[in-house]
Amino acid sequence: MRRLAVSSLVVVVFVALLGGGTARAHDPIILTADQSTPADGPLLPDGTISFALYGTLEAPGDTRGFRVDFADGDPLYLSVLIPDLPPENSLPDDLLPYLVVEDPAGGSTELRVDERAAFAEPFTGTNYVTLAVLTGSAMAGTYSVTVTGEAPSRFTVAVGTKELFGTEVENVPNRDAGVAGVMEWYSSTPPSVVTTSSSVADTTVPGTTSAPVSDVSVSTDVVHSPAATYADAPDATADSGESDGSGSTWLVFVALGVAAVVGGIVVTSRRRSTEK
Image (cartoon, rainbow, N blue to C red; front, side):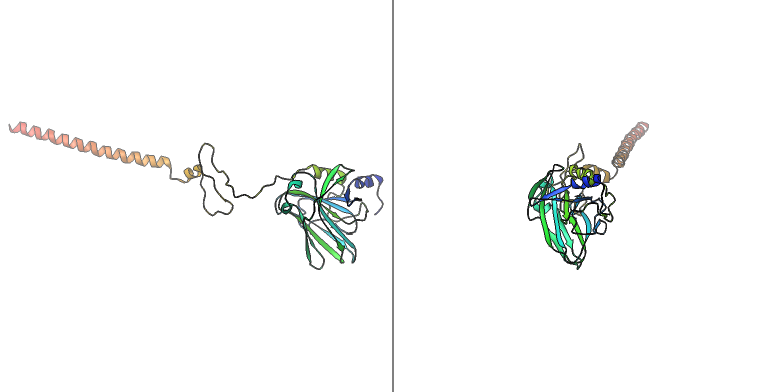
């Protein structure tokens, strides 16, 4: 189990995260989009072994999760990092990824940004920023770790300090991703950051003029663009038809009235001629 082919060892040795001036080689695991909770994610069998879990939050409030087993008194080491790249390295602290760590007794700890320590990883030429580190003495059992944040962003969670590569890990469908998987993750920019704003979204239909609609996400009012207003109005053809019909009827009555007056004059004139 602990014997590795030389090629496998070379692959994982290249993934070395530097921290505090000490090189620590971490066995890489790529988290997938459907591993949104600890129960859905990998189960690391020994929290003292150095693992690095790489993932991407694709939207504000998105989550990724994993679990890790410890024996009583094991050294506890967790850190959360981001690539030293945009957009992550330009995000404010309150939008950056953070960890929610639940211990076997049900206690919960939030590991939020308390530093921005940049360092370069020489083997792959990648650069990172450490955001926070949690250390201590573990209790026996399974810890559940959830990664979340308020903006799309890539993240890395480093676990443990003991270098031991190729350990079997449950629920990792891409265990052989290795350095190639890490480099793909590193070069894949997360979705664009969408900030919530009170500014108005323009719903104007091309070729028309319409006032913007404010706060449409919470408004209960029905908003009509010009096109919608026209679509909701009574049929214009029917309106014009009714108008034309009433006008024509009025003209008929006038014509009949004129004809009656003219006819009366003609009849009166004939009677007077006859009497004479």
